[in-house]
Structure formats: structure tokens, C-alpha cells
Amino acid sequence: MFKVLDLLPDGQIEESLDLARVTLPPDGTIRWVEVVEAGQADLELLGERFGFHPLEIEDCATFELRSKIDTYPDHLFVVLHTFTRDTDDPTDIQVHEVHAFVGDHYLVTVHDNPVPVAEQLWQRAKVDPEILGKGPGWAMYLTVDGMVDAVFPMLDRITFRLEEIEESLLSGESGESGEMLEIFQIKRSLVGMRRILRGVRDVVGMLSRRTKAPMTKKTALYLRDVHDHAARCAETVEEALALAENAMDTYQTALSNRTNEIIRRLTLFSVIFLPLGFITGFWGQNFANLPIGSETLFYVTLGVTVATPAVLLMWFWRRGWL
Image 1 (cartoon, rainbow, N blue to C red):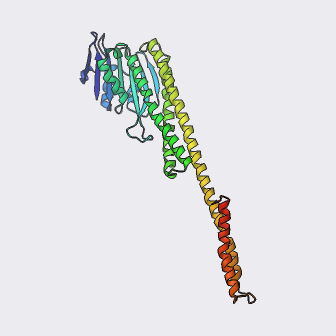
Image 2: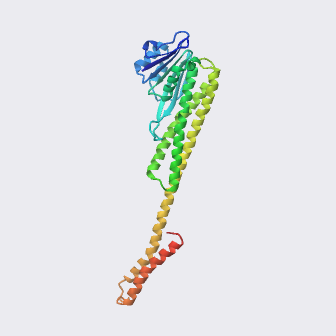
Image 3: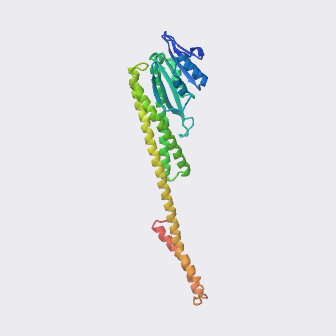
């Protein structure tokens, strides 16, 4: 689906779905074209009307690229990523890949599914002429800034959940295997985010050093701040991964402690019943000289059999072993 937003020379803003406007803007007009879930025919139309290189169109048809920036004589081709989540599950993260063509008088963004940040900026640009009035590079900056800032709430949520799991493991109130599985899921998500955010950080850093058209010195200055945010996102992912490792170590330690406690209790019960086994085994021997018919020895043996575990239990209890 194509959407076109034009900032006309008189300052008016026009939104259109007319395919005839999916082309280079006339003089004095700044145009933003957004393409969502583009098919091959849509991409070929873009390449034909804007004169984009076939390699760019080929890249737009593939939404598993790394973040990158390519320079062409009259525009920049930028690939960036962001994340969103639709549920309360911190591991349920959806990756969004945005392809952008930034020219002197136009901005073309292509993505495979709706990106909330891009939609919010589009709605702002419909009522605020300054967004496109400052140039396509400024609109690109606002898009990148929103994409990077959208990552922080998800990282905060993941970090908070890891801290909850670690506290639960330390207190012994966890479901153990279920929370261990969640840790592995979170770790897998963080590893994927780290791989993607490293590329985003590098691309934003390269954009922040561009001061010639279609970017400007002012835009580059603001992009430096975005680069700092992207670097902080990457660092936060590393910290969250370290926290996940700590949670896994905590789980292993708690599991080892519980195993040791079980073995200790089993050992105590073995100590309690060992004397009983000796007593019953001794008097169970088939020797003729044993006083088998002694009623007195029977009651003595019975008393010793009852008293021995009772004394041992009391002794263990007083020493705090039970």
C-alpha cells in the first residue's frame, strides 16, 4: 500500500493514496512516500519512477538484512531495525525492518509490516509542516530517533523480569524448571537484539557524521544524540545478558543447595535406621546358643529398638540438623 504526504510550496500539507503521486516531487514540494507490505510490482514501480538502483530494489524485497547505509549520487539508502511487543510477555518481541531512501526533496520508507513509530510520525507530519519543512533528512532523523527510543521500554521490562526471576530463585519460591526455561527464552531474545542493535548503532553513527545533502549539520548534531541512545541500548542489552547469566548461576546454585539438603536428610535417616538394622540383624542369626526363648531379652531388645531412633532424633533436633 502506498501513502503520499506532500508539503506544498505554500506550506499546505496534502495526503494522498494516488499512485500518480508516487514519483519525484515537483520543484518546491517535499514528498514523503510510505510503502507497507510492498509486492514486487510495487517495488519495481518505485525503482522506475524514482530511478533507484536495481540493487536497492532487490534489497527492499528482502527483509532479513543487517542495518546498513549505502551512498548514491542523489540519495542515501538506509536500512534500520526496531522492536515492538504485542503482549505482556517480555520475550514476545517483533522485529521491524525499515528501508529508507533519503533524497534532497523526498523520503521513501518501505517496511514489511506496520511500524508504530513511523505511523505516529506520519500523523504528526500531517498537522505539523515543520517536520517536512526542515527537509527529508529531518524526517529521517525523527524516524530513527523514535525507532531507537522504542527499544528502551522493552529492555527495561526484560531487565525487571530477570530481577524478579533471580529474587524468586533466591527465595526458593520459583517453579524452577519453568523459570529456567523463561531465562533461556529471554537470553535468546537478548542475543538477537544485541546482534541487531550493534548494526543500528553503527549506522546511526555514520549518519551522524554526514553534513552534506540530503543531511544537514543541524540534523547531524541531533543524530549524535540518537547515536548515544543506540549505544546505551546496546550496553543495556549486554547488562541484561549478564543478568541472565547471573540468574542461571543462581538457579544452578539453588538447585545444588537443595540437592545437598536432600542428601543430608537422607543421610540422617540412614544414621537413624542403621542401629536398628544391626540390632534386628544380630538377633536374627540362626545360632543355637542365642537366648531365643528369653522373654526378658525380648522386651529389652524391643525397648532398645524404640529408644535408639528416639534418642537419635532428639539429638539431631537439638543440634538443628532436622
